[in-house]
Structures are given as C-alpha cells and as structure tokens.
Image 1 (cartoon, rainbow, N blue to C red):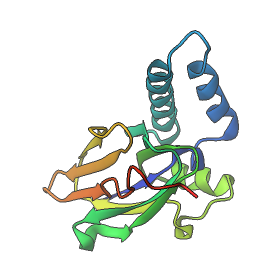
Image 2 (cartoon, helix red, strand yellow):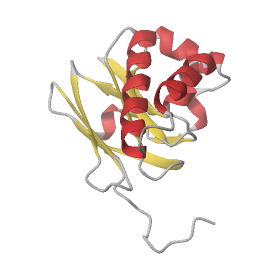
Image 3 (tube, one colour):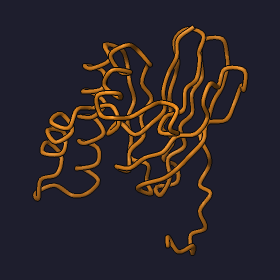
Length: 160
C-alpha cells in the first residue's frame, strides 16, 4: 500500500522553489491561461523532484478553498484538505514530502491535506470541465476510486 496526499502544493514546496515557479509563469507578455499552464507544470515538476515520485498539480479554478475526498472509505485516512494558494496537488506521502510539510510548519492532522491509501499505481484526473472548479479524481490499480467535491458554490453566492 502507498499513501498519497491531496493538498495545496504551497504546503509542500520550499518558499524559494515556490517563488521560482511563480517567476517562470507570471510574466506580463503571457495571457492568464498560458501563465496558469506554465505554473501548474512548474509546480508539478518541482513536486516530482522533491518527492522522487510522480505528482499532479492544478489550479483549483476558484482560488482558496476547503474540500474533501470521497470514495472507498476504508482507504481514506484523512478526508479534508484546503488550498491557500489556489492550487491542488496529489503527491505520494514519502519521508521527503512529510519533512517538507513539517519544515514549513504544517501538520497533516490540521486539515491541510487529505490522505488516502492506494493499492499500486494510481491514475489522477484533474477534471477542469467546470472552468471555475477542479474535481480531483483518483483510481488505483485495484479499482478503488476517490474524488473531491463537485463545485458546491452557487454562481451567485457572495464570497464574504
């Protein structure tokens, strides 16, 4: 069994690495869509470098959020997660990623990261069908499936 975390990559990547990803993406000559794609790819690359395993990263589509993982409950260790940088990632929970989170002052029990156990390799889909929301969908080699919340905010709802 492997464990994976679903969280905002800003809770994992060191600040200097995060800033480097920002500098690569957020240049005035690029449009928002290009910037977002470059940023997602840069963050994903750095997560893979840090963890030594595969990782996925995407904008949340809505910015900061709190969310929850649903699915095969016997494989969900911790269901709630959040984002403070408007991003979401799926990354294997390794000694390196755990140390990186702790180095940034985070604790996995604080609701910053959902944790799931998987059997074998996983497939991750960052579903951006709704441009204002990302649904994280995960399937493991044994057929266990997990997903985050669908967009639970009313389009007319005020963010106050």
